[in-house]
Length: 487
Image (tube, rainbow, N blue to C red; front, side, top):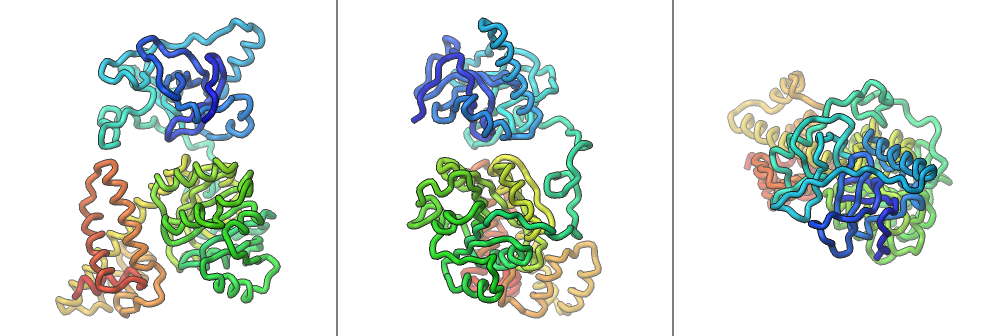
């Protein structure tokens, strides 16, 4: 456990859901008493207070270089300016102290830090609270107050809505600007990174991704449960760029950035925590990047992040939108969150494997975004299957239905391919296996249970997918749901 800091010490304080924030250890007010293994913290910029666990507090000066790039949000930059301004004034006048705002006491929640009794500040989600714009409202808590179900109360949720953002000065690159339109005719990689990239997992998606990395000139260190798949790729390309290793630990030792792309969170966890896994090598991750491309839930991703960081590594979740076809054709959409510097290091790889990549902020946001998009995809797939079942049963030619569907505004490349599989009954050699789709929709339902958000269509879709799996369609393309719908 970390040592406690003295009152007055400048620190980085980590509140759950936010990056480490410039702060100062201060004395709690009398009514706050004390809290075991916690210290009362004042946050610069947002001017809020909170009890923070001791092991979530680090020395400001010792970690300044590493943590000062933790966020690009305006609130975070403002906090850095405030703490540096305080340091300069302290040098000139050692007796100088900040005039800290008073704390609003709340009788029904004595242990929750309260918002200063002043105009409430709105703030970027990256910050422990408020932003430069102010609104005259009653004081709010310094950190979001969650109800028993884990969601914000309605009044607080409305108050947390961000002000309109100005995107006029953002980078126009689709790799860094979420506000820009994805460029489907993107330039392919001209100059590959000179880093060594490890890649673990040669399944439905991983095989296509690795081939594109090799073709774009990246050095790749491979590992897979079935080592023969690695050897096949090495033999096929006969390239000095490809090296095969027997364990995940060896991949880490010989790589600068490591990608993991396996079937589910259980397999991803085995790679991390298992015998001769990623975390089993002493000091092997120090200063290296770990990119988790497996479709996992936000909580698991946060756990992975903490485990990587405790070993001195940097973590990025990179969730993949697309199927086997998009992976092979270098047309994936990549959703990332976590360490921004690692996102920048991986840009040449992302260009090699996809048509665009988005950086969404703190760990967990990419996983949530991926889950939302997968839910839309799953429900649409089941709806398509039932519609073709209805057409077939009512005497309509499914070939004619497909021909007309393809010229309507409902058609998308994904649904067109699935409709073609339904008409031809081609469910073998899947580009989106049934069990993977059901896994994805289950992650959505798990999240909805946590926040008590009703998902009626998603729940029904999950039952349909489970039934199809029970009928023995695991390993086949998700379009095989048609068979369950028809029979």
